[in-house]
Length: 484
Ligand code: PLP
Image (tube, rainbow, N blue to C red; front, top):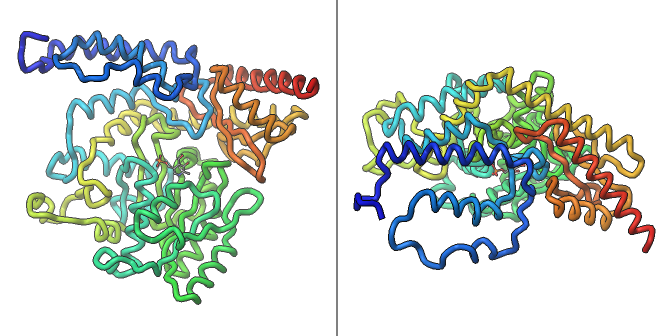
């Protein structure tokens, strides 16, 4: 127990231990490549290593760091390993980690402009930068009718969009009296589960979410959408919301935003576009065709915490008109009243999100953009896409394997031609070996492997090694299959 009964870390001690913590992270990054990517612990194994009771007296920081290495690290799946190819990435980088650290150090709670003006103004500014970097429609900028805000996740962005759309469709009546099960929402069979969750949480009711079929390229079919909206209207429902996706989670399907947007505009439906991972690609002009028609969208989101080197959590959420969002989510109890809010001259971001409180997330995004520069970010996106396209060519050149769908960007969906059981065994063996981690989906109702290349430290040699392992492991499984 330190002599100082308060136990607080004084600045000198904080400085010393802070260096130790940064050293710990830097050492981790130096060796993360050599660690088994997927954690191998069994359920309960980590808890079994921890004392049942909390410490009665404070412990030395060094003891905590030691336990971090010995008791926690074995239970970590290494998302920051260059051999991580699973799900979509959640990549991080030095400047983002430092930005987040400083945000923790400042400890700002930025619910109102007045609770830390820089927290709000930097966020508005960086999101305007981002809008320019992605070439988003002018309405999405704070200088237009809309603007951007950082949410914790794409799931929260979808929920905010649903609620704003619900209130716009019902003239603000459902916030007061509920929406009575009359509203109907639309998305594709391939949309992320967060849309379904948002529909449930926003009180729309899952039975009122229509899953529209996709074409062979996994893109929503606009004519089926139009037909379903029509049918629902004739049945007395109020169609109000469509969620389209740029880069679906399963196979990176690209919905035709322009065609969907026209239908929404004609019919008065809110269009939300979810570009959670693939949205980052629009930093490069050559990939902007994927978001063609975005000017028809009422809201849009993408996650720098997936593919833009900004550690979790950071979702950029834009609206083309901020009024419906603010009207739907604004609450002003007496204890939050202040002159700046009343003047109407400031943004209070608590009106743009579900929770009241908010972290200073813009710092890490600002650090990332300033560290890499737009050109630097483009370079990385292009490199990831090139690596994925090269991987896809290797798959095509091997007669034992096939692509499930052509890869538009950095996600390759492929499979061994030997059937579901072989692909399952292949994935289990690869992931169990620790040298790489990839996940699966079902495409054309067949087990399909997903290789997503977007990790900060991934280089060609990692992709080459992964492909070598995949082929060797497949050959081994094939020979066992032939023997039995
Ligand atoms: N939308 C898409 C297309 C996704 O792929 C994901 C996650 O992978 C999400 C939404 C949900 O992201 P978040 O974890 O930010 O809610």
